[in-house]
Image 1 (cartoon, helix red, strand yellow):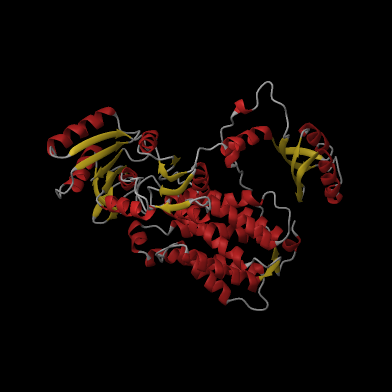
Image 2: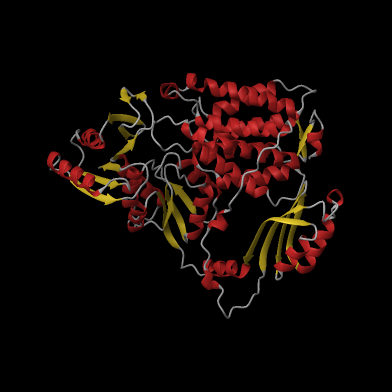
Length: 554
């Protein structure tokens, strides 16, 4: 157990304690992520705030797994950087900015008392607010600000880290309960703010660890481990040149070694004798080992003298080297590149056909991270990159990645739905010499588009003057529910009428989701042609989740 946890007063926090608390925060959010997902303003099955915030903080946890230091500033630096790259959804981005501000406030602190940490929390709140162009009260921002203001105001010379977090958790819960009184849409929907709830669970987890509670650590799967490996890069006649990246999580065993006096320096010396890039550190009875070596079997055999493996990962670094060489063989740099986001094989295909260089798979309930955008940017050899997030909840992650990326000038186009993104990418003219002139044309084209979504309802609600019952089909335009019907056909017809009745639209594109069968598409097509004979109608197999039909009226 960390020495700080043995001291009831916990006068200071160091890097090791912060890492333990962060693990607790991630674990507590993971346990309650589905509850946070259900705190959705719209009664549709697309709530993902809990998942987004969970993946954001877990990206930070993954970044400190191999950090062997007790320096608070260093731990916070790695934690916040991991969160910035892993940020998903607007609440995830705000969360990452909050922690980035805390890190900035602790950049000179090997350890911190309550007053120092309180100041860092204030810096975090300020950075979270400045990360949003138009901050909205009654959201995660309010919950963070009110809790920090309350806790910092109560700091005295006798305050401890425990008393600070006790005050934070108490006021965060109270502030969360007040969010419906501040933001009318929450009160109308009968929920508290989901982002604020996610932040509460994280800080609650921090506090639980401070009070000695053992929380189950999240299980992480790195992005790299999920990637497809090019096995052809190491063939039957290849020679092992670069060795194996070997990572082991070892549980020391009392029957094999004296755990209390285990010699970590001796282990590092052994690993240095058979490899390089050695990292080894210990937390209680668990030892984390990383080494690049030609003999991973020797590493495992040696470690088994002291305990048993919890996890083992061995990767052929020749494959990684081949990938690096392939990246270096990119074509000559072009002037413009395009990145788009789409959810569904049909939609992905459409954006590639429109000229996108990279299409990031994602959308509602599958928000890509800032790191996903960063990777997409790095694959495009262009001086200027235009980015179409195509979802309001993905916009901030794209902007965060654009600010971090230095390999090109990145312009994030504020496409908040598939319809505006579809028309926006279609409008790009790469013959125009200046990027800002292209953007002006694209944004003008997007203003002429209205998009509508058909979705099932998952609860009763009364919103925007529309009465909704669980199981109804609803039509959404912008941020408003405009229609609710028992039958999906009636809702689809009604939404089309709303989009087309003003007479200024010339074309309607219908993206069909994976849940829309052929008979539904045929019936809707016949009805549209009969009732709107002067409108050009196009049906495209989008294959998207959640929404059986997406209407794009131009």
